[in-house]
Image 1 (spheres, rainbow, N blue to C red):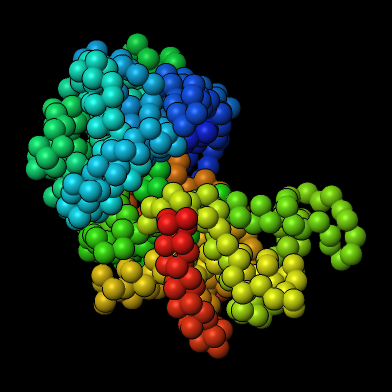
Image 2: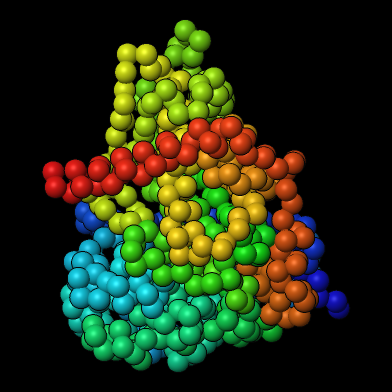
Length: 512
């Protein structure tokens, strides 16, 4: 029987999504389930490793059942997962503690320790400054929970845990693929190895780190014991998979140097694509992730609130539309806000907005807060809405200025946008004008699962050239929005003022 189907599973923070595809990218069926978050004490955010396994099993089984596809026709499966949290397993591949979520800030003292002791070295080797990720978390377990640390044989990602359980891997076969290495705190990302220098510096037992693999490596096969849980045929190939951001970038076809990837969602993420490694030791803003595609890197940065800032404005200040108080559906209300903003000229008549209402992520400054600057009697709701939209674009422009400083010869070709904010042509045009890059919205909503499925296809030889296949199957929605030269020139001094404003606010809130 010909094997012509692939499965990708996205193990997210709040949900697990599984999707069954044909090799040409056509979606056959999909399923989604929520994953619980546990808050046993203030500041602690945990998840159960078993919840990742059970939701993956149920969603995959539902996909296969709903599709009517014979499970023997499914060639391979791969998982992508949330990237900055960390799991702990013992010598029997069983959890020694709950999964330590990227939302959990218990490790803050160890972020500060790593930064103080070797911040530049961590940044230059891993591509990511000390932040809330694997490194500080592992040190927290080592110093605050030594008994659990001693019983922990390997630190693993959710994708590793689920794939390992499904394949019946032994603990010494636990793995991490190279797209997670920037978040590890203890890697030499360019060489694709663990850094013994960093491990020795912080006293971390390097034997507790899993083996490093390529995303397309075959890590096992579905074993007889667990096949029924997923509805898969015994012997189905399991590929290593990737981090969720890397899988999303692949699914969106971000496979050529000079491309940009804008995830316009709850958080606002801008990722570049380069053929050179960038270590932003100067600003500590860019995080450089290794791409799934060999030889490519994805320098990225993000705002903790992009879509959230617009929702906050809607819920607290946008009470009237055309003089009438109304209750509209979310999409209609956002459309009205953005339509109103469209009437305002670039620069919002001198009004600036800082979107860091809950702290700045890149660079890390938990004390940072939002602000309106330049408010005058003449400013209306429309000006405030325009300033919010422009603030995201200005922040993106700062990220790109850092990228260009590190890679002076980099030529930007296009930006591909996904997420709820990408539905707005007005917002996309503002970004195109500010960044001076053509903006293209992509069709569809789920790119991580397709990215994981393509990785599975490459692992078993159903996909030959992964980059070409990814670019071919990423379907654009209409023609690209071209930047306006006149608007771009108007925005140039405003970008500079925005950058200066954020620097001043950072100092202000840090010393408050």
